[in-house]
Image (tube, rainbow, N blue to C red; front, side, top):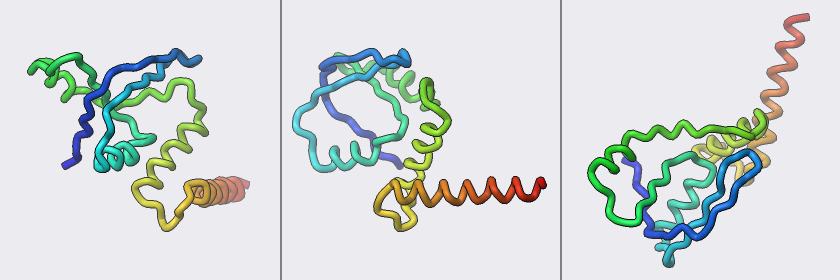
Length: 123
């Protein structure tokens, strides 16, 4: 079962981005080491942010439980989307690569070789 990251926070600011999305900034009290670890493992993953000034009501929790994290990649190039997906894969199984760029280069060279082979087969 996945753990739920719960941190009391207040919304400090927001900024509109050129792709019409928002960047939200929250401030918290000092997080525990476990919370910091959870935050680090969540980087580059889509999720759900539920914010309420008070305790969530039953209907609100049901709504949160039914949200699907079909994150919209609006404003990102296909190369950026692919890189983000590879980053997520690296976090799950680094295949021994300590640096993401090395992992990325490995998979891009495999992909390029695959495309070259397809082209050769079509000739």
